Amino acid sequence: RVTILKRDGDQSAEFSNYEDARISSVAGDLIMIRADLVEQILLKDSVDIFIMPGVSISFSSDDTIVDNDLNYDDPVNCNIYGLGVIKNTGSGSCIRVKNPGSKLTVECDYIQNVNGVAVNISPSLKFHLKCNYV
Image (tube, rainbow, N blue to C red; front, side, top):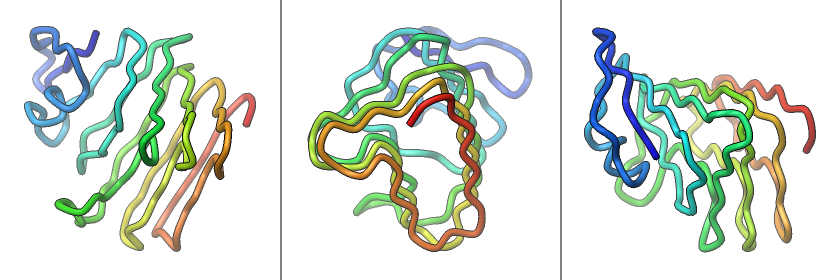
């Protein structure tokens, strides 16, 4: 479901969830999401994410993709790309950037939010979005 393309070109073993891959990754790695996930994506500084075409990331308890949470409040600089789908089925945002020092670029097929704001960006250093449908 989730693998890491290490910065030296090796590919990691497969992880059953994003969080385990995030913990195992280091700066310069690429996390590849190859199957639908229902979990929050907490970004990690200098670790990019590739979402395979048609693969869906969804969450309902809070924001789906976030740069910071209660235990991690440093700015992140990363890219999310591929033709994946980013969803939120609760009252949170699909993408939430809280840290004013974060730099985030997102490319995806579409972003879908049922009840909340699709993209919620506090003043950040840089945010770019390229999406076929919001």
